Image (cartoon, rainbow over all chains, first blue to last red; front, side, top):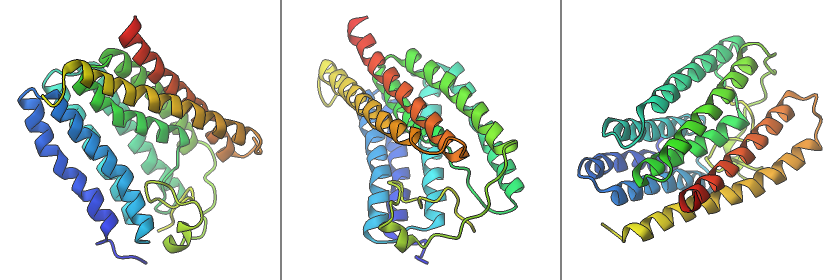
Length: 201
Length: 71
C-alpha cells in the first residue's frame, strides 16, 4: 500500500493554494485572473490522477481526498462568487441543499452496506465535471442564469435518482480490494480512483 | 486585464463549446456501448442514465455558447 504522503496527494493539496488569490481577484474585480485561477485548479485536478498513475501511488485516501478537494474548491468558489453578487444566490442555495441531501444518502448507503463504501454514480460524475465549469461561468459572465438553473434542474433529477438507488435498491456484495499498483494497467480512472465501484476499507 | 474582453469571452466560449461538443461524442459512444450490455444489471442502467445525462449536459453547453453569441 502506497503512503498517503505521496506526489499525487501533494498535487491535490496544491489546489487549495489557488483559493486565496482567487478571493483577491474577485475582491478586486479581476474576472480574468479569477477565471485563470479556477482553470489552474481544474488542470491540477486532472494532473493529480496522471501523477498517481505515473508514480503508482493510488490510495483509497487519495480518492476521498480528491473528492473532498473537488467539493471544497468548487464549493468555496461558488460561495465567494455568490457573496460578491457575481452569480444568483437562489440556484446556489438549492445546489448546496441538494449536495447535503446527496451526502446524507451516501452515509445511508454505507450504513446499509455495513462497511466503508462509496456509491459510484455515473450521472453524478458528469455533473461534478459540469460543476467545475460553474465558477468559470460566474467569473466570465457567460450565460450565468442559463447555466446555473439548468445545472440545478439536472442536479435535482440525479439526486432523486441516486437517493432511490442508495436508500431502496439492493446493495451489491463487497468486491475484493483492488491493489492500486495492479489497477494502473487495468483501466484506472483519470482521477486516480480504482475502477471498482467500491473500495472496501 | 490579461487580454481584451472580447478575446477573453471568445476563449471562455471556445473552452465551453468545444468541451461540450467533445462530451456529446464521448457519451454517445459510451451510451452505445452500454446499450449492448445486460440491462437487467443495475450498474448498466446507471451507465445508460449517466451517458444520457452526459449528452444532455453537452447539448446544454453548446446551446449556452450559441445563445451567448446568437440569441
